[in-house]
Length: 178
Length: 238
Image 1 (tube, rainbow over the protein chains, first blue to last red):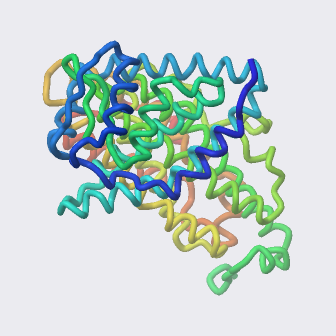
Image 2: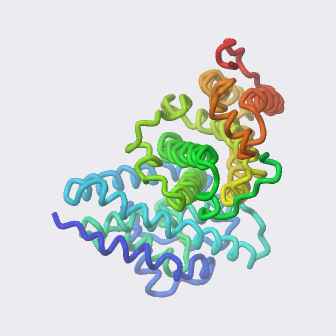
Image 3: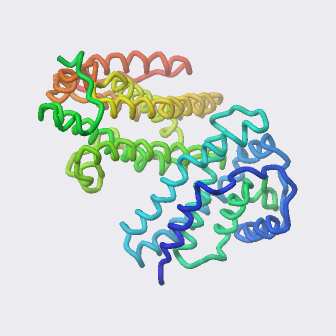
């Protein structure tokens, strides 16, 4: 397997310029709907749930029913990381993956605070939840790219973040997006 | 001597006595290593134990911030010429603090670590806020708001867990497991390094003073949730 670490670095470089969380609650555009369907395919659901606002998104994310899908993502991420490490060397892969965390640290939290402020919400915990979700999405997508899987659902999820949305995961047979 | 001392840059540090330079290097290495250990041993694994996506994403962010603290101290160390391998856990012979040898096994344990362990970190960082080496003082100031948030995360998550009798019992069991490892976070009493740090105004308080303060604060904190700290053997407080 050829490992594409250039794609990992490209995601890291794009972190600061992304319009994080700028389209929360807006009607889904056609390309966003296509991305949401791509993400949904990873969880064997076909419908899309357009979540109306942050309060509804928060309530949805607090449902324990969402945890197994997130845990399955973590298992998949570990598999991808192991594959990339086996092919390109663990130190090299981990160093490049660290660049995603480095690059995501400041812009994601700043954007989350701005997005919340725009709707009159001052909630540092929720800002961290948004920032954590976004960084995790980028990290997962980087792993998929590194393993030469640009069609992986992780990539669709990250592209939703990159469009300014908050993908929330599978929820009652649909894939939920704010 | 240290009251008037204020060292503003790595260049100024290089002109200071070797003993002062060594003391600054030691404390930077300690912070760089322990921040990274914390992220690797507790925060990253905790994502899997978090009960909902909300708490998973929040934990993920907390892990990133702890990693960011490592990077902050690592960069300061690099600026003054500390070899990188001395500040990376896997590459140094320096042993981690004993707290990092306790494997994380549950969400309740993680919440207790944030509640009580991050309070210990706050005390350590507070002690840097008047440090004579200004870049280290500034790093402490930059780190403090996030450490306070992490401790609040501990309070909020423990507050949620103790709402049920079963949850409260699990939190108490986690405290009983974790608490005995925490007082050693402050180092040995009569530590030579600690004496040097105080001599040069890098730290303000002795290990014993900080540990005693910590134990009192921790007792008051867990009492808010009608929880208790187990008794510690005398050697844990020495």
